[in-house]
Image (cartoon, protein in one colour):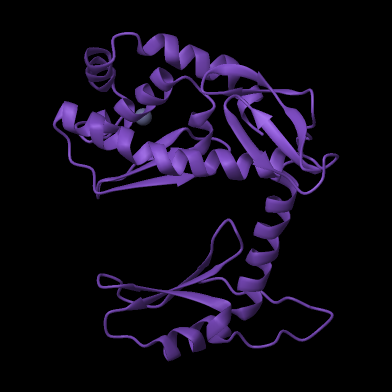
Length: 241
Ligand SMILES: [Zn+2]
């Protein structure tokens, strides 16, 4: 943050308080760091020798810049959020099949049915994208960690943590510290396709690149990986809601 900026707000910015930020302690951090994540949260890194109080003072020195970053994040969040409108009669991919969204009444309350799932919704005319996303994300959260650990055991890899994410551009990722992140939208694909993405991430624990040697590992572990890659590519627009 060597360059400074000045922002002319209509209202003077209130100083940040503890409740406005998320503190993260980081034993290897040498200094205070402030950043804004995609959801607009202000994250403050506190070095080992530091205090939350000083971190807050640091953030307040950069208050204007942080506010700008926060507004930017919230704007792009609003722009990218469920613009897709889903209603009864529409079809979505779920577990690798196209299923119809059906609305029924249960003792007068509207119920959304898709595949073998049912969920109560507030209003039959609402955009179903949000409740669907919420439910399918829960399903992903419940199922993906098991799948990862099963495959990790099969390939002799160690996974520390499995995270389910809402990413617009990535199916999964793998960190050197042993965390595998997976997009909840993999619950829309066939299980074999989801498993391919998991295997792909597991193979990154052996090779942290996309070299021919990496793809050779993938092919050995998942011989029909090209089918899954192609399916994901040709359906990404239909899955990205
Ligand atoms: Zn990869």
